[in-house]
Length: 292
Image (tube, rainbow, N blue to C red; front, side, top):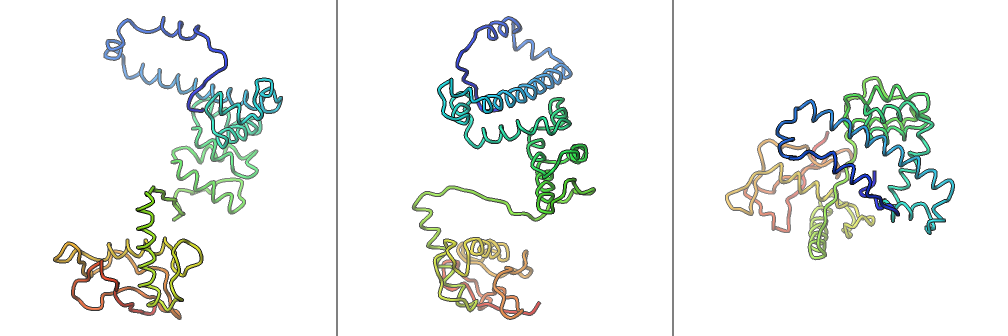
């Protein structure tokens, strides 16, 4: 559910009832409790959480359809969910989407409420087109699978317009993975200058047009290609005698970059001489082309 709840009216009855059920000495209860009791406690709380989430979704849908949130002083149901339950607009939108599917996916709803289906799997599998009537196949597929495997299979089903999972859908594709990290303005400027410098060194060897800024604005070499070139250079070489120098490995850990082909030939980098080459040098070496 959302991070916290901030109901309009609060009550002290629940807190009083909870305090009465507390043991006299919590530490002693922790030391004497059995592993089975711990599991039963966790399982009971887990099931209560699932039931509470479903009840919250149904309540939020009722608020959206009846527009009663207006009487509470909110212009939209998303603003109501944000102020009262700390839900962002995207999260409230997803909750409303799932709330409308609860009646259409009764089997998955029941499995989730019983604790046999996780919320993440339920949310992902609900995106399969025309999944009504095929819930059982997806529930069986999700057993023992990771969320990454379920997401990959759902994405494949959407791309291939399938309603059911593959019979042996275990392997993950070499799909795109988004990597995000933050930089200061100074670091960002330094990175762009480094990419532009590297593009100027590589593009003449590739027979490309005059290098342009690697900001993804139409240049021949994109930032991802420049970054992967640097990664492959690090993996293909070993440190030389000086801390800044590097020499070619006898056996490369990676194949040459997939970009940079000329007339059916594949280009890979190699040093101009067997001597060590400094990474601070403006020349990154010449290109040697070989046929596939």
